[in-house]
Image 1 (cartoon, rainbow, N blue to C red):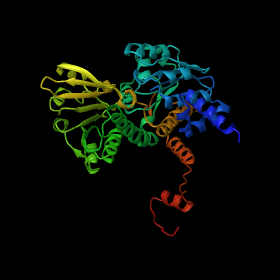
Image 2: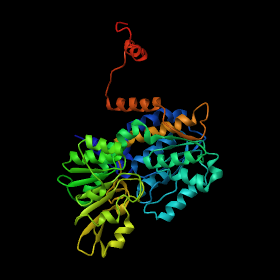
Image 3: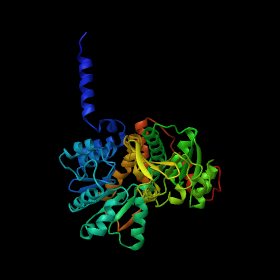
Image 4: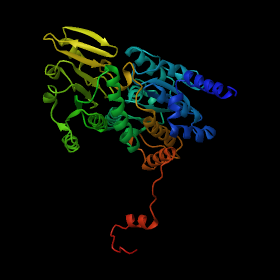
Length: 426
């Protein structure tokens, strides 16, 4: 018996170990299909595409796919503490891909890197949190005038874009990728829900089951966190400012109350609102000893860390990724990931599962493809992703899962189109 097979397997393992994107590629088949399909025709040839996102392996596969389609790719982080250095190095070594990032960047270096990228005058922007799009308008207006379009993948980013559009300052068309079903039904609900709670558990080595978990906000992200927490055996409490979403949480079986009351009851608090000052001094004063605080919103403004620091008699770090605030009366409050995104900036964080990000980044890719290959340019503004693109990505994902669905018969199509339904026998 020879050892050829085992030797080959060992070589394969060594190759995978040296490639920080290998695992993500294996679990992102929709992006792989785009790379295969457009690697020959290169529809992005001649364009420079800027990508701002959390620089972990899943984003790396998106960047590779955009490059495979012919674009020159410039990339920067959308959050300074979620960058994986090995991913940046692997991508930056590829011809046609340029990094404006490094692991462990300060907030100042993060800001400078984004500006340096924008000075390269990209043609298209794939954004996270409206980081590049806001900056190019505010501080590089001459560049903004030349940008052909963009795509935005987060709730917080779409909110900023809509404000820009309302004020009439948006210089180019942007697809609100976050709001398309193939993004928010899967990435926001399942990706945020699972990755947030997984990283809370890993960072603290604590159990979710049996705890009272307070979720601030019941949009798609909050819905995912609350559902997953209850599925893990937690008692779930939801706080909201929108009466309709509060009713939805109630009908889904969660207890709904205001944060003033929930603060005294929670063991774990997770913010998912996309707004600021959600957990603040008045809430910290009511929390029990050992309460844990985590943020799953894009920006680190949902938990008022300044209030915690002002209240604390001393601060310690009992575990990596956990900041403990010792209050004068003896209570301790534990802040995870410094109040930044718990699923992306904790010490063990890897972001959303690759299978989920496959569809999100597929939608970002098709947003760029649709705009850059269109016969006519859209006027400046925020646009919904066309339904045909959303359905096409869903079809591709089903194909990769080997899942088949029914097709409408001609009579069924006619029935949909016949608004009178006068003749049931046609």
